[in-house]
Image (cartoon, rainbow, N blue to C red; front, side, top):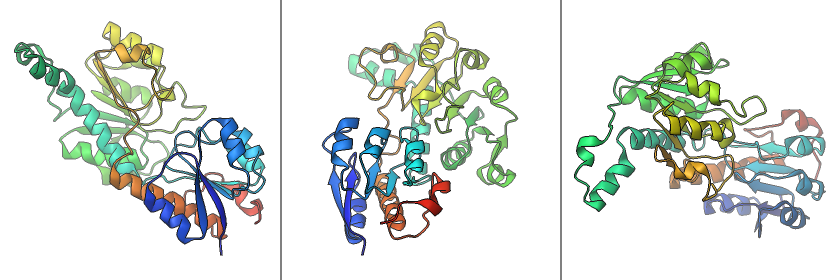
Length: 326
């Protein structure tokens, strides 16, 4: 029988908590997400489930009984993976569990930009009859959607885009041709080529040292002046100062952002004042269906590790044969 407490760093759906309890674990919600609180409250825990806050090295060092860190979602950039691996702690994530919902959020941001929905809503409320005749509205059918990254979310976005009549161009050098064919996408030879050709650029890669700042001043300058930039992945992929400059100067036409380098976005951040930007608070994977799937998957993978079963979504496979014993 699996027993012991599992620290829940940020709230997850009750379906995931039920899965933990059914296996014999005791879900224990954290009272805060700062490193000091987590280091104090992880004592005695055999497992942790975290979301975008991650889990720091300071807390790992304070957790001699910890055997597995489950990530509710795909991104593991805020988890101290090196420290976990050195300590023999398994890290698992849930790629694909929220793919459809994040892809839908991507399309929602595209529609909001193309149809100027925030401005249209304000015009009705303010009685601004001129909006109908002055707004720049875009028909999407026939335009090129460029996807930087072609994992589960990128492929789901491609399928939605092709259904809308968009031509989809995707950059995913490690993906087989079959993935492109199934999703109805064309393979882009490079990110630079995609930026120059796409009418809409959408980011779907994880945040790593190699991808941090992937879209900066030079990359924005390669985009079409009437192009949109969408980011539902990680805020650190974009140089936000360069993006603000590009929006102010008209280098690109607009941006739809669900993620930011600092979350929540500070109220005084320059992006918050950009009329050409549509901002949402990292909710792409927060639909009811996605929250259930992701919580259940994260919980199931944590239970697998504690039961000695090699899990899906294994982030640090090198640790498996030398993982901490109960």
